[in-house]
Image (cartoon, rainbow, N blue to C red):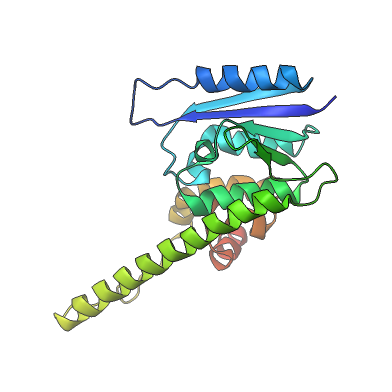
Length: 208
């Protein structure tokens, strides 16, 4: 019998939403397919938040890697998040652990029964990745334009001379990264979860 975990999410910005419908739909699907539901993870939080700012998702990522889970069930891809890059990072983490993500509204899984990447899901993910790339390119162009405009008007860019973030400030800012470091996660995987650069993670690792 396949062991699965359910993940449900609604936006914290709309108090009328309820994730129970998602749980009911996925529970029915699991029952129809004779899956054992190991645990249900649900939260009310904006999908625009980073993965590291979503407690239930973080707990899910840790749980599936230590409890012999075969699949993660979600009603739709947007339940994993509205930030395309964050969604892709989460899916990649699951794929690396040979845990398939079933997306109910597309009736598709990220992995095939043999554990290889599902080409159809990869096609979908590739499209999302391209959207994310275009979004990042647009953001970079806006930032660069803002810098140029700032400098053209006599502004300064960069940290003040002599500025250096102290260790306590680093520990507070990167508390989630530190938790993952202490749990033995690799720098690359932490980067995928939290979005913190590997160079910054090396600095954080040196002070814990």
